[in-house]
Length: 449
Image: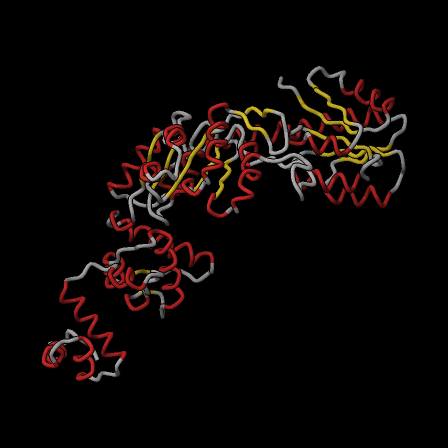
């Protein structure tokens, strides 16, 4: 049977020895004793199976320590042992989530022994249920989370399948909005690490001066404001997967430290000396060309070769054909269900409009467009008029549809006619074309006034 790790916090050395002796009668129990709450908090990263705390400690009251433990680990069972029979405190702690409140008397050892047995049995039952669910469920399906049937997407699925069969590093590239984090999660949750943490970090969203602490953690007092030890994202992801999005934004000064962590498979927290061993699967993503960044001197070549691993380049939505309609239906149904709006359908002209668009914002932009269309449409059928292009860049939005030069010419003239209140002479002057050209387009109904 696996060892069961118990953290015991007791400031009375004599009483601690009694409790340790009681628990150690079971050879499966590994008991670690702390005399202060602060020492316990500093070791929570070791993830004990159970914690027993004294109600009155030199540095913390039991309720204060309980809250601090819960801020770090909201799952671990906690027992409180007290020398005082305070019903109000006991009720308050039990309501907060403490598993058991035990008084220090002649029955303490028996109560503690039986309580630990109950907690462990409950934990084992939960694990068995999880195992049975895993056995009953079908293998994680990529297409359950990534919608589409295009040939371009099938190639991505094939690469993702290879990625799940080993711990090779993965580098995902593609335009903004193509779903890089979704692909990273799908790889993790279909890999042997799926029961462990998936930790995502957006390198572009963290201020430069905080990245080192965020990634690698820090010790108490490492810098102003470091009031306690903080585990970095790499430690949080230990035995699981860390996903570093926008990796090209990592400052050159920190690229060397990241390289060392990846090479040595260990991390040293800021302000500390302890080498913390790591077993982490790395997935990185960027919308930039990393090889080009290396050539420009903005990204270390040795780090590039360390992280490139298995490259997966996600196709832009404009290259995925009818996947646009598959995704549109999915987003439409999802938004309608979440808002209890009933079912909707896409009209033929709406489908045609969706397929013509170039999607500079990719899947993220399509999702926004569809949700707005559901809100704007009258009835239950989304029409072309309900679909608005949402590109931030007006030039991108205007040029996103695939049209002929004549169609674009008509669009430009139509916009100018609206702007100048259908003043044909003024529009002709502004655009440098003949008035007869405008009249002919109006007569042929290629321009709508």
